[in-house]
Image (cartoon, rainbow, N blue to C red; front, top):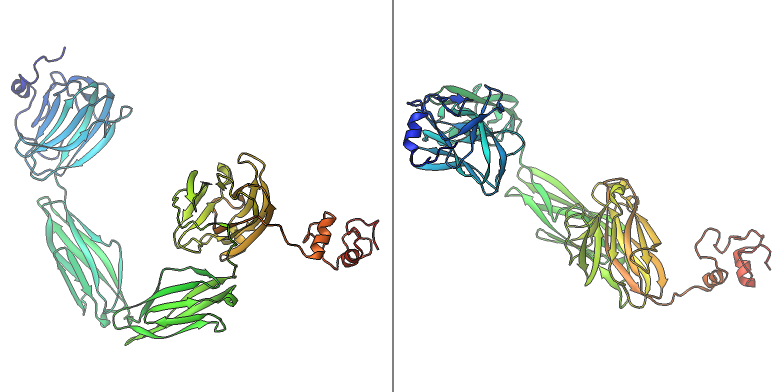
Amino acid sequence: MRKPTILGMMGLLWAGTAALGQATLPTFYSGAWGGTNVLPTGWTKVGLGTDYSSNYDGVDGTAAKFDSSGDSIQIYFNSAPATVSYWAKGNSLSGAYVYKVQESVNGSTWTDVATFDSTNLLNNSVAVQYTNNLQSASRYVKFLYVTKVAGNVGLDGVRVAGPGVPSVTFNPSGSQSIAASNTLTLAVSIAPSGAGMQSWSLLPAYAGSASLSGGTFSFTPANSDSNKTFTLSVIATNSVGTSTGTVSISVTGYVPPVPVISFSPAAPYSIMATYTQRLGIGVSPAGSGIASWTFLPSNYSGSATLAGTNFTYVSAQADGPGDYTLTVIATNSFGPSTGTASIAVTEYVAPPPPGAYTVSFEDGTKTSYASADVTLSNKVWNLTGILIGTDALDLKIGTKAARLKYDPTDGEETMTIQTNVLANGISTISLWYGPYGTHGAEAPTLAIEISESLSSGWVEVGEVYAGGVSNLTYYSADVYVSTPIYVRIRGKSGVTGKSANFDNITISPYSAPSYSAYDAFLLKYNVTPGDPGTAAGDDLDGDGVTNTNEFNADTNPYDEAIHP
């Protein structure tokens, strides 16, 4: 039967279940806990049910049972603590329960160290060991079942530890290297609270300058310190003892600070012919400047200018496809250095006809590959296995492009328009494509498909192999369907986990195709222009008469029995 007036008899209970005095740190106890068991010196309890038979920490044999609101275990100790560790487990805990670990300087004003409740659950299946930091001024720790709704709390293996010998850490950590005449700076930290630095040294003797003040070590080696290795030693101390932290510092030969050249935005750079590429050029350190520059090959038809640190290249139609290199030479009193930036110019593509629908991705955002609908150029598309990429590795015309990640194990990767794209049909579908990042030849093949229905009947009208190119490349597929249809881009094949970019999808409105007289002749006899054997000098049907002669005579080029 539970105690009926826990709060009213608090003082009696503390007196009846405590071993008077203060515990000496470290102090540890692992049961038995409940009933008439007397806890160690400085340990007191209120309430508690019959111990759980489970042994949470593997020491002794039982765990304390907190089975009522107000049940507690308190530890009173005589020196500065560092941590409290314990094993705890929920036993059918549910509802808005509250279980706390607290600390106090005087035993009357308490501060929460850890709180377990509906937002920070105790595990109901297995006991878990926890460790919490304590304030050095605290002299009390309490485990308190504040609010019980349903279920109990088990506790075992409680240890309050005082500070150990101090530890010394360096940031950055690990062995260091610095060139002569340059400065190495390290942050030096000593823990726990109350510990401090006793002394420090840097050996062997050095010709440069070194200091350690306010937790910051600074070392500027002289030229004569080159090709030597030094050891920084920091000795820390506290009431427990001393410890030494060391770091090795290698000094390399003096390196003159020649200029460093950077370009903004970051590479890669790719534009379509007639477009403009602008680059900002950064040169450091102070005192450095641009001495000269070139843009090669020099037979470009556009214009290239450098005004201050701003480079502008306006490409001409004749410049694509082609690759050009900007070379910048900067200099300072220590010497020159060279930086380069490569700009790929793709072939010129005429603007789309009036009424065309273009997806540039600039107005959309999608950062994951999970299936989701995205509005692009005022139409809704479903993107599955595709995100809208914006990083430096994405090949793109503006600031965004689609990135398809091929994975045959999780369904198809598709970009599908959710409404008929153009009311009067489609003439062509074009796009720009290329491999993502360094995926190169492993980038997937993409299919361009159309259908009269979203659910079935997809027909491929073209495909592109992103792994077969290195820059954004233009492709246009003939469609010439005069009725409203749906369009999608699909990952057709590739290497699992590899990706392709595509951008500026342009769908042109239907107009009757214009054929040459020779192509019209082939179509008349149900022969597709461009198929193998359809060139003018070929003999498609093998009757000994060239296609040109069949064309002149208007005889069937696909029937060997009919010829001039």
